[in-house]
Image (tube, rainbow over all chains, first blue to last red; front, side, top):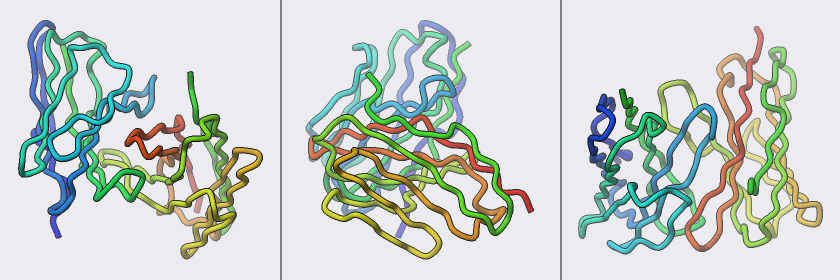
Length: 112
Length: 111
């Protein structure tokens, strides 16, 4: 059974640009959550999608957005990148809420 | 407002010893408490989890102790091994689909 796949693994962008990250969940999992991990702030919840609907959102500015497709694959987009957006972005999939979540290896975003 | 406080920030244990990591939470809506293990360059991996109607859960060398009235839970790693050296995160999940993580504990097991 394939795990959660995130692409790309590494990304370098310039301030002001936008970026799109992709997450393919485990087959059969309909819940996809996104997290930002930084040394200073730890793991912070961005948003959660289930069956193409955003069900919950963390305390991030509107520059952070996401969507989920009918095949449960999800993308997150960050517009007008800032230096502080440099982080490891993690995606996790699960069958349902408050159940075992499986994380991908993350996308390491560096904003210069 | 941090809703899950994790301690200690770092921990050094001798091989064969017991590693203990503690977490305290505030949100009584949490109904699932997982622990994750993360190695450098990898995403977190679920280690063990507990629901609030259970006071203890054991899987191999890993045990969660849960105290609902004190709103605290802890991870015990028995017979700690160098391969256990990693960062450990506790979390609280609500049925609203939001996970709140502790700040993490870096465990080093010395051979």
